[in-house]
Length: 220
Image (cartoon, rainbow, N blue to C red; front, side, top):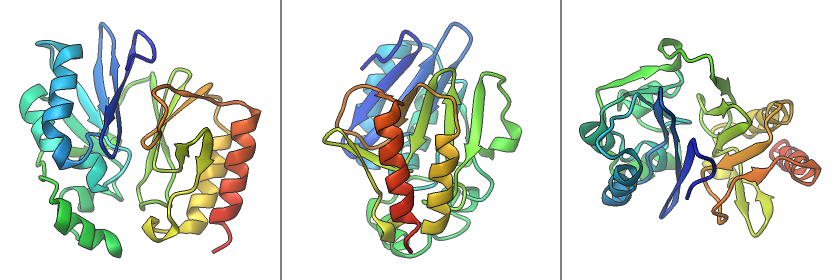
């Protein structure tokens, strides 16, 4: 689904990835669950053709975001980047904490050796904002007027929905990260989990719903 001439929303079963593609760069944001391998490769092929990826930007270490990283790199290239606090989990140097340790055993995301930290990534048009809570190194990614929000929230039935608290690393930090998101000057939000094939206008209604989500996370 084309959001703009430069941004493609890649709808997958279990979440969304996003592709920023311009004359000078091709950046993929997240890669979906392992079961989506053929789907994401085919959808990327339709947009990229024979072009390669310049980078893969990972919002966090969960299997539904890094699940096809290795397969995507084998087909389209591109170094992968993630926050330093999430790198040990994404690179399998450390088991994911809590219930996610069980989930990673079930979905078995392939591990890439070509993965680095955001400290090594540089693009003046891309802003990486550390928003911990869902995972220690969860980040949101800003490109022009668009903010790719990962798993800070879901957007279902035309409203902001909190992530399940048991799936979060630290709910009090989630609350702070929501407040940080509210301070950005983005015009559109692009969550990883949504039932709408479009970006969400970052208007007052959405801001109020996000404030309530932040309050809900902060109740722990």
